[in-house]
Image 1 (tube, one colour):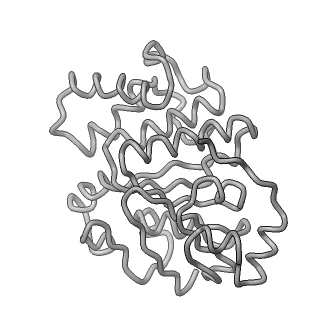
Image 2 (tube, helix red, strand yellow; image 1 turned 60 degrees about the vertical axis):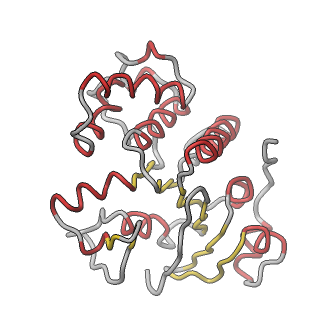
Length: 239
């Protein structure tokens, strides 16, 4: 990955689009400082005026309240040994220690309601849920610390098409309600058309085209973008 630059805004979605292996997930993890000690990283990542790349220790831990991630695989991203209540409280206990246990329990119930799951699932384990339900739990976990930014790393690609639409609708509803920004990583322009406000198209570690979603979807300037657009069907945005 080289020379990548973009900006995100509250309540809006930037879709980072490209084929597998082009560097999309690397960018998402680098923004959240998840590749320290694993990869050599240069450049800056600024969120709410804070340089995340300059933070360490307790300062970085506090900053993680503002940015969370939803991973691609709902079957691997949840701890199979933890119950739902523990999964949803874990981040709050670590990143928002000022929130007392009783309030954490209330927050779990509120989160389940927000993502369309029943309150009586708190004692169940991840293996008892379908893929779509697990991804709803992953979304709830990300929301638990009230972030300003969520990196959505191909959050629908492992799901059936009908379930994909449900998860996309949920993400759109939550964004309207909470004003959270999404960095939405995907290879699928059908998903991009449904959710994105801005688009950045990646190829071989570089952004080859970027701009408003409407412009790129209707009049792409780059040949690679046109190839991607020609290869996918369309989803209809819910009213």
